[in-house]
Length: 111
Image 1 (tube, helix red, strand yellow):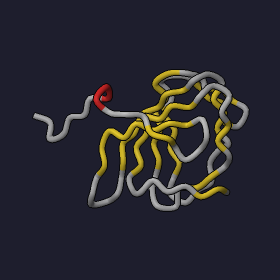
Image 2 (spheres, rainbow, N blue to C red):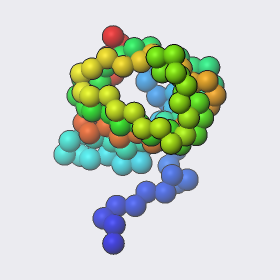
Image 3 (cartoon, rainbow, N blue to C red):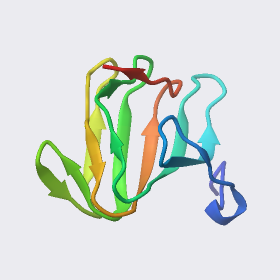
Image 4 (cartoon, rainbow, N blue to C red):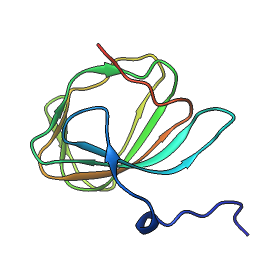
């Protein structure tokens, strides 16, 4: 038996840290501040280079096309950004939905 179950349909989209980005929190670890979220990027959104100083990030594309460093990636792609490392810009070529895990608090600092 799983210790925790979340149904995405029962959760609400919230405004993300950048315009055109929404987050749907699925789980938060109260001891670490880590979160599991669905992220939705509207088509055409560019997220500038940034750093997550307090968490490693893992993002798995569920749908859409995402441009990173001149290459376009689609569903089935997994990204990892180590804590404290600059990553981005990210460009949503279409609407993109990703399942993203931060193993610490979701803080964002522009690079």
